[in-house]
Length: 292
Image 1: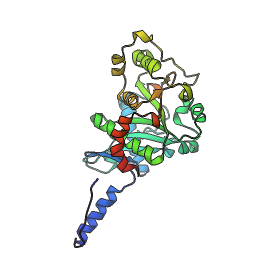
Image 2 (image 1 turned 135 degrees about the horizontal axis):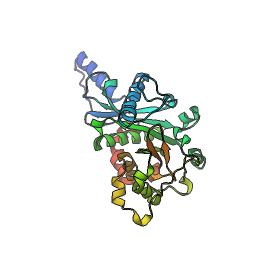
Image 3 (image 1 turned 90 degrees about the vertical axis):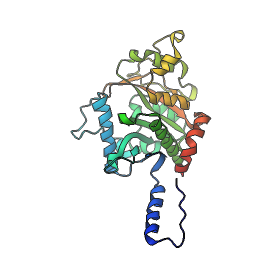
Image 4 (image 1 turned 180 degrees about the vertical axis):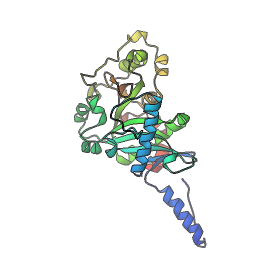
């Protein structure tokens, strides 16, 4: 962030330009910045529609999702979008409008806004209401619909997203991050080693335990403990799930097949106090500037 110092003798034109720069810097929607990329919240319905179009390109055109409820507008949209905050990754070097510069998105649903929607999205797959009931003094945030255009799937973009999420959590005093994360495809056995690793080594327990709903429950324990190669299991996980693990997340019991999105979903549980100190130091140093 720039520190602008203006002399009293500066021209009116320069003062006007400085005011515009200061206004941009103080934009409350911005949550992080790395080089030409910035992460911020969608500011209007037009930007939400652009995020939905990005989701459609990734989920439907690239990954093969299918749903009879999708409209001809080629957007991935549902009833939760209206009450969510939409995190956007913007490439400020791209031509066109702000909507044309959106290259990634993440959907954020705070607990208070979920109440207005009648619950969280992931409650259709996992018993989230039971987990929340055990922690009445905690503020939950559901993360979902994460996607980035192919050209931007890099470590830097992932870091920027986490910088933005951390700033958002600080700004909104979030205590627990939750949500579904996905393996591609509808055959859990294709991810047997990775799922078994999560089941044996990373399962949430005690007050943080959560299960897939009984009618949709599919076991993640597909290999005996002694047969699991940890290195191979980790290499077979999607980058998002590996990112959650690095932060200190645990996972629910059982996975769920999402036939519409052609994915195998697992449930992430990440209390803020469980986040590794080195990652708080890493992301927090930058995010703190945008958390006020």
